[in-house]
Image (cartoon, rainbow, N blue to C red):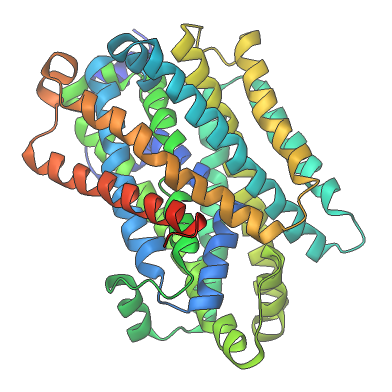
Length: 420
């Protein structure tokens, strides 16, 4: 019997044993913490202080845990990844909708990340054109994808997330934020005038629709579905702990911006024109070490997020069309190559970089109800999920999660149309 099968028949026991098995959930964190995320939370902290922490941290983390757990539990119950399940149970029309939503959403999302890479790295190395850094970052993560080994991604992304956590948390500790204001921002929802797109971007950059498909595929890759009931606690641990870590990272960046840059926004009219502005603004206050730590975390965010967007798009297309979900399959590689490189060329011509990044993240917030709706419908069917289907409480919180996303999306669309 292989080691993989031994692992499935004997689920780990104890916190540290569970921690060693974390994988698919960490990919989710690596996917949603990109340069677009860092830019969105930096803009939120700079312009609105701690007032939007409830959206970017509290609500985003709760929504992500709720929806990701449902998607992963579906894979655990059925032994089939989400995109395949949608095609088999809901038909080709639903599969086409999923392909369109994820492929378009991922491409736009990656455009935002590409723009963030160019802005941040050109601020650190001003002599080098932004487009050069975009193509360097794309070449790096595309090469990682071409290796074609799933477990390599898990290890690389887990390492990058660990580096980001250290870098941003050190920055947070150094600036000594106002604890009372921070707690207030985390628990009291407010939507300041003109902030609706930023709020939706904060949600959309964390509760990323494609992650529902990515974690589902990860559960199958790990083989946890072979022993579903015994692996359910492991799956939930793998979902909850990494996502909380991701919330700490994004919260740290936003709180640092609120502490250091928001006063400058009020007194001097400071506006963030690039993700790198935050690191440069922190340099005189925190010294060279903090500046370098932030820069490392920022680049790590780019390299962790963009390959996951390309990879998940490939999974969705392949599984929806009945292709092999094989990282070395030519059709699979064509999809992730397109999703990897098209955003780099689009981003090279972006004339309003910060707006592009915020818009790219908010698009995911608009698309979220489509993917989430499929998940909630399927997880409630007894002939699909069996004993792992939703209970009443899970349906209530799932309905609230999707309803909130729909409400935000409608508000943004109405505002864009000039109705609101």
